[in-house]
Image (cartoon, rainbow, N blue to C red; front, side, top):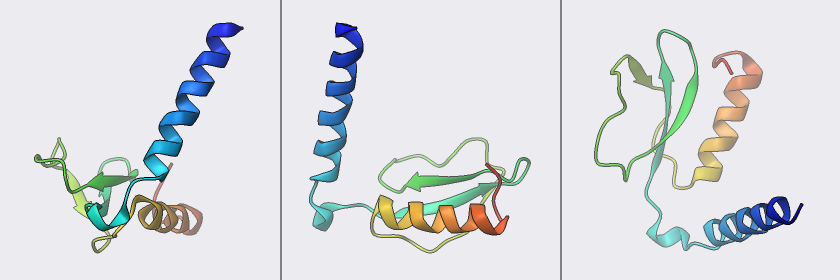
Length: 84
């Protein structure tokens, strides 16, 4: 039980640290859609490589924050444009 509590506390600290980051230094995010499965994924542009395998298409413009990309992804999931 202590390990579970410690794990949850660690996760809460990590999430709060992520939420407290400065958005001025944020890198843009894109929403990509895998062609074979229809799965949509948020891609961080600060990653120096491209997604692998290369069977994806970019389905959004650059989003300034992860939260904005997540809202778009949720909308596309609800409309059926992306699969889960």
